[in-house]
Length: 551
Image (cartoon, rainbow, N blue to C red; front, side, top):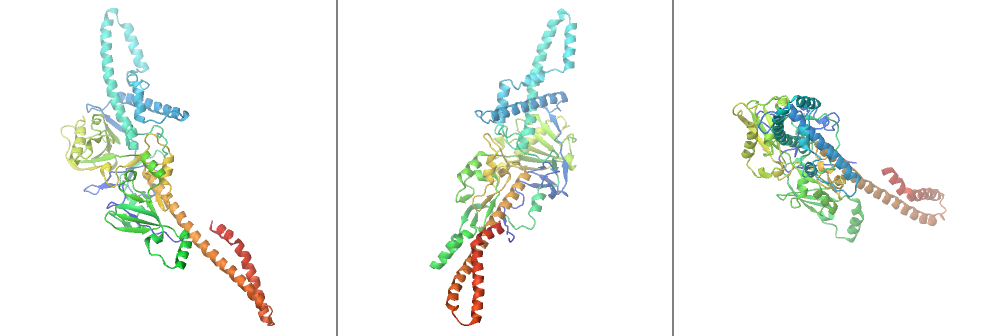
């Protein structure tokens, strides 16, 4: 089989799509889209970035409270206990939903809210829980108190209860901050939209995650090497499953029409893609890799014939979130740089609580903020306003001595507002079922599909997008091989049928000439008789033999 010719149509002026390595003025790349490779040792993309700078990530973080002060270890531990208790509730509810057919999937946010209301997740109790040593000390102190002092002690206890209540509220906000870091940042969706049943279902290659500090964009650049790419080619419509007769004039003779009609089923169909500016391109098939956000909008790309009803329902049923980023390059560092992540509880209202400490990985005073997907107040806002909001959060931290250092460079990336993406990644929303990815990956005639939203095991990841592309490429080769096989089978069948017709003619000739007294002709005719008989027997089994060979 000949090598398949490939052309990539790219809507933007660069390779990578949602992998975007922004270049600082000094040439340092900082990823504003995908940043991590998960399970580096077994990740299939690791082979493409062996010589690209990358650093192991432990996700260790420091947490600053509402007042900007560094949260004490004891308070942080209490918040972590709440998070662990929430995880146990999630696992229990998942099990109950799976065991009972009557129970329906709900969002993670809805479950946690219900758990707080019915006290199955009792934040106050967890916060007020004393260690064994603390309990023993309090007991001994109570015994030592005289009767006259007990009233004073009662007032002190009431004061302590009030303080504990404030601590519980403060700890609850730290827990919310942790929840955002552990779930929303990883999945790229709000817990209010995230399917409970989907948690823990995405497979991993391992726990050795690495931040690609040399630029994740190097991976698609290497994969696209030596492949023709047409940049700024925005697809407006895709006509698929076309016959060649739709693209060119056919013969008007009855013989020509009969031949074309007979051969039509042996020729692969065509596709025609039209760009926003009126250009067209043709091929035998197309692999559609546009983001799910584009497919969700029926008015961006017109498919003719339309996508199947089953596929359209699958597109609607899967969620599409966004992870917007703010890059901040300062003149110098002002934060402790031993941790990977800085979490700011004081940024909850602004939706800016998660900052990646790039100084630890690159040695440059860079912070990258991933801001909340459910915060809509920044939609359509000017870039300067968003940057100032992030600076306000950082300025409140106790580690800032005086005014913030000078901001050298800044960049905001808003995936949800980019017309070619409309978001950053797919996620399983309420009612999700893993079969939706299989439906999205199934070919529709000569229309093939790939992307992180089409793979059930690794949705929302770069390696998931890569593996889905490999599967689609394999499907295309099988599809093309199918037509090549049938073309050859048709040719072979025609040849053998022709030979069989000739053998019958030769037999008639034999009967006429066998009477001849010329001995030479008799021997020659005998050879033809044997050859014709052999061909006749071969023709009877020809189809079965050819199928065996080609399969």
